[in-house]
Length: 344
Image 1 (cartoon, helix red, strand yellow):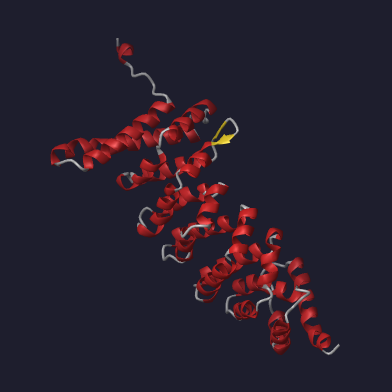
Image 2 (cartoon, rainbow, N blue to C red):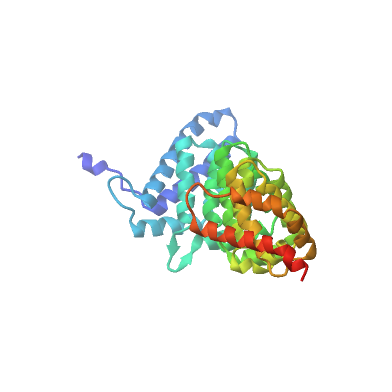
């Protein structure tokens, strides 16, 4: 007789719908009187159980791999009705494990395809305020910040999202976020910042060309000149990668034609930590390799030639690097010959 009373397994779509309904109910009950309070106590645990089940569908578990059809059904229902926005809003009510599960669900859904479509990208294009919520949340609540960054790291893989952040005030926030005192959050923010400036090359190139003055004024002042060791190291490495990308060749030429930028790199070369010196070297060599050096840059290089050559004599990575040594040899040779070129 027991078999007659077994519950029918819920489909992925049903779990999504029930989760969405439960979140809505929990929000409504938060506005009711204490008479409803006892009911609400049972809602959040149920939401957490559903979220755990949704994660299991997308990632599989110790007993089974994820099933493509179930993932497809879940994805379609998740984005058919607005589930992402209320899920993000409900994070503060969930226990820690459910928050982690929710973060992983959102991250996974960014990659799920329906046919050839990335439905998450289509959804976010029409609901960019969700991105505002995630970005603003990083600085508003450090208890939830790591969950927001975990979701955002995957969302910025969509070009429409990266372009939106770059062209909105949200980008300004990352100059603060990469320097937050919470190391895990600052590390995640640095990864997102790097993704924004390296993944979608045409978008980045267009953005930097249009916003050159503002962007590099902020970057140089807040990250390279006033930042902590961690900030300076991450920022100098990222800057080198951006400038050496072929799609940013115009921006690179403009950057290495600036005397102010050269002075910043020379100061970084004098930093007491070798890691920062090495990252600065990879940018400094672009100034030296520039075939059309402005006269003021040539003058500074010549005036500081002996100091630079002495510094480079001892500059080398911990592990032997033939590429670095070859670059250093070229830089040293070019700087040593500058005075001769001036007299020609």
